[in-house]
Length: 193
Image (tube, rainbow, N blue to C red; front, side, top):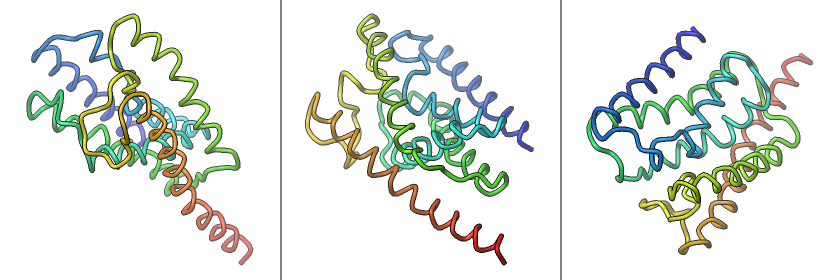
């Protein structure tokens, strides 16, 4: 089943990029997998297949929170046709499904320091993505231009909305860890009984 899900994730990416090629061709400024959700899906897929703790924690803390927020307030820009629209929602649904699979099937939970490790990794990614943005005049991870969406987490213009991203990421990751605490406690009481 896991390898079927991994294959499905790869196939949906192939369909998405094939659609992009046939619609407008690939663009270095728009189509590299450098948005947070792109590499969240990649890391979630690795976490699903390899059951790596860091990949699971990243997928759970960033992937699920970012995917839920993105699905609730999607950005209408760049949605060229129905295939892209469907691929967009499938990609984000998989980002939620994969860490939930790790929790339910594999029994994984977040560990101490998961928020800090995840937060530091995302902030580490800003440097190379920022350099790519500068070289290609692109806007990956929305580091240069505020995304066109009605998200309540986007406050102010550049660079202030980036600070809002940081604060909201910490708040959402902290909220995502609350069920993990209850799950850890529940599992420990079950193992004792």
